[in-house]
Amino acid sequence: MASLRDIKSRITSTKKTSQITKAMEMVSAAKLNRAENNAKAFGPYMDKIQEVVASIANGTSVSHPMLESRPVKRTGYLVITSDRGLAGAFNSSVLRAAFQAIQKRHKSNDEFVIIAIGRMGRDFFKKRGMNVISEITGIGDETSFASIKDIASGAVNMYADGSYDELYMYYNHFVSAIQQDVTEKKLLPLSGITPTSKLTSYEFEPDEEEILEVLLPQYAESLIYGALLDSKASEHAARMTAMKNATDNAKELIDSLTLSYNRARQAAITQEITEIVGGAAALE
Figure 1 (cartoon, rainbow, N blue to C red):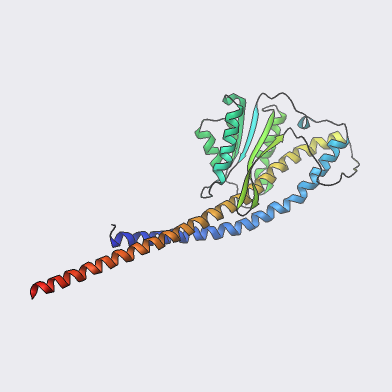
Figure 2: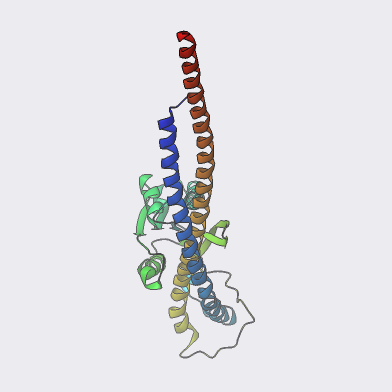
């Protein structure tokens, strides 16, 4: 059995750990509220731009390279993870889904490229020698479009330049504070664009083709930004849940250690009393 000093030391260290995890849980809860509001606030913009794109794409005969499928020689994967751990299965679940899809679809690194958003994803793929052609880390909790503009526009431009012929996006979709679903979305080519409401009739100036030339890249970039906002909310929710579980487990461990400490202390006292009684009896 461990000594009283060892048990007491473990109780003290576990209490300190539980204080840290409790503080992290509260911080993540506050960040989750802001991140969820940001994701919801971006929704109306996405609905409107999707309505306009759908109106042009479905209401006219105008075509655009981003709307047309082509023979697939190389596939791009945009994977969104976090820069930090301590978030339960948040990173591992999305990385597992992307990794398994790549392993299933491709036989060599020449057949795919990876765009990594987040340090955890970047390190995961680079450690396995996979072809990471673009990366971004250090994105703050208050994510602005300007902070990911370069990588979003770069992903769209690489498709236009023929660096890959299709682009898939993997991220965690926020459902609730206790549920985040790994999502695979085919980002490019843009297909099956449906309006969020009844199609509105628009008059275009100068013409539909020139508007699509500007609007479609913006729409694809907005899809990436929207997924990043969604992923940020999922990250804070997952970290809040993980820290709550850690705090609860710490409390259970403290209770168990306290019980062990009291039993050991009681046994030591009983042993001392027995020795005293035995010594007194020997003197009689």
